[in-house]
Structure formats: C-alpha cells, structure tokens
Length: 165
Image (cartoon, rainbow, N blue to C red; front, side, top):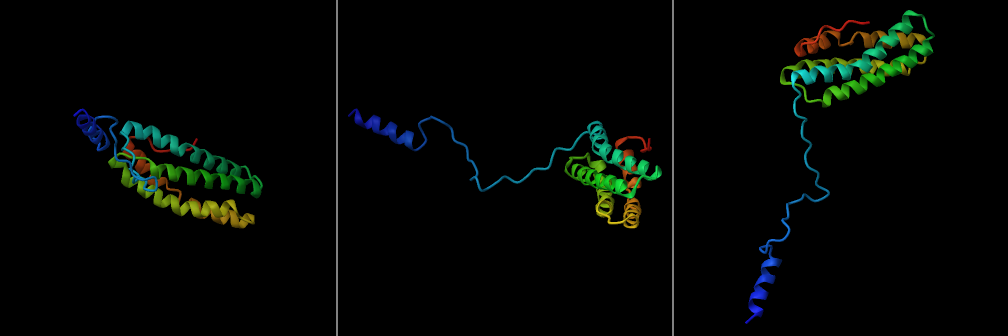
C-alpha cells in the first residue's frame, strides 16, 4: 500500500506538478529576441545628449576651418577632413540610435538626411589625391552642412542657435 503514494508523488514530480523549480520559456539560442527601440528621452535629457553627440563633430569641423584659414598644407587639411568624416559618421549613428522625444524626431531625421549627403563628400575629401580634389569635396560637403536642420533640432529642444567659437 505504501508504494502507491510514493509512485503518485514521483509521477507528479516528473510531470511538473510537484512544486520544485519553476521553469520559464526560453527561446532557443538561435532565436534572438527582436531589438526594441530605446525609450524616448525627456526634453532635458535630449538637450544634454544632443550636445554631447555633436560636440566632437563640431570640434573636428572647427579644426579643419582653422587649418584652411591658416593656409596649412593640403595633406594636413586632408587628414583633418578624414577626422571630420569619422566624427560625422559616429555622430550620425548616435543620432540615429538615440530615442528622441517625439517633437524632435522629424528635425533629427532631416538632419540625418542632410548629414548622409555631406558624409559621402567628407570621406572623399579624406582620401583626396590632390589639393584640387580635396577642396572640391570640402566645398561639396559644406553645401550639405546641415546647419539649418541642426538649428531646427536645437529650437525644438530649447537650445540656442549654434555659434562657432
């Protein structure tokens, strides 16, 4: 008679009805969960994040402008153009992957669109084989500087218009 309760307890344990460790459904290792968008920042958070993202790019641009105004050798300017291209690509990726407040999303998208046009020329400037090619690409990139779009982002976030130092 004692075997019956012991057998019933064993069956209940094996079928998962005996308490023990609770198991949760885990997707197979080959099945990764869908990426989720980051939660939108608040406007005060977005102000700080925007300024932090664009600062290295603005600094690289200012160094390039200073070198051009000082008449630095074209190879030096090309190196600085390469730095502008790198910081441009980095800041675009950071702008793209940040969860912006709803009211800033359209201005950010417009800035990214203009940035994409400039980036192509910054990369070509960074690889230029002559002073003429370098200056041609710098002028083409400058035509898509995104200043108007960036000022819309700034206005949306309650930041002052950007002024070069």
